[in-house]
Length: 441
Image (cartoon, rainbow, N blue to C red; front, side, top):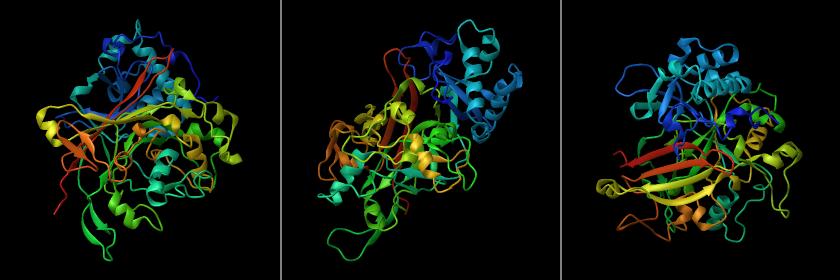
């Protein structure tokens, strides 16, 4: 077992914090979670710095670092996490991440001698604003849901929806890191070229088939040297943690531009991630077996191991919601569109790292992977509107009196993610939200 999947005292389901809000039923951030992000208090000129979510509060790691309550790896990790981005912490590796987790768990546990000192470092989440967790140098978006790939492929190739390479290789493309924003991102509807069916000449204008994609983000921790692949057995030591990710997509632009080199302007206009990164160690209780149907080709040796088969998948529950401008004006809550789980993914996070580096490509701390749209085996588990609306042919009823095939101006999309199982304390990812504004002139 690696340090990222090992259960220890920090996963104890009976553990409780002296912070009452962390012990409430349905709390996303109990003491067994401790996700990391970057924040500052709203309406304040103070710098952004690292923080850890607990209950309805944030441990200000910048302030905690000044207390000098901790030693060795824990102290180094807290100082690294106190910076305006988490890249330095990510680079320290799994031993430092574990030391930080154990130290904060001990400080937050009921009866801790550090309660008073730690309590002085709390900031209410309601009074905070967030920045991206890391400076993201490179962004790769994968295509790991065979259910999504089949549904999309069937729209273009009904007799042969999956291309021959899909079951052999984790498909991905290099995305645009400059347009990645944190939850609350408000972006204008993208413009671009699109070609209507039966027409010979494309037109330029705002996208009319704007969509969301329900994904997870994977933050890379320690990188690898150029020319040195990361073996599957070591892959998770290079993964800092997971977040929610919305890879907004202009389907009409995408259909026109994607051949022969794949997505470009149809996806580079905006990508939104949640502010909190849930570490792999926090996800350890929710590991599940990774298995392929017997009729499918099994992974090639560099993408296969007993450990990956036994517990390479992670049961992260995912939900997508929509709230139109009219619903917002009425005070109506968001409406759920679908629910699925990352356990259905055709590739594991370890396989993504091993494949990405198999040609010698060097990853760096803070690099981000998207898992691709996460859709499950049933229609209600589709992770995008293009699937739910059958390519725009089946409008969905939303709110009291509206319908959608694709997103309209003023629509907000909300993602939620969490993990639960008998014998473990449920943990959450928090919310991810983004809103579509009218296209710029």
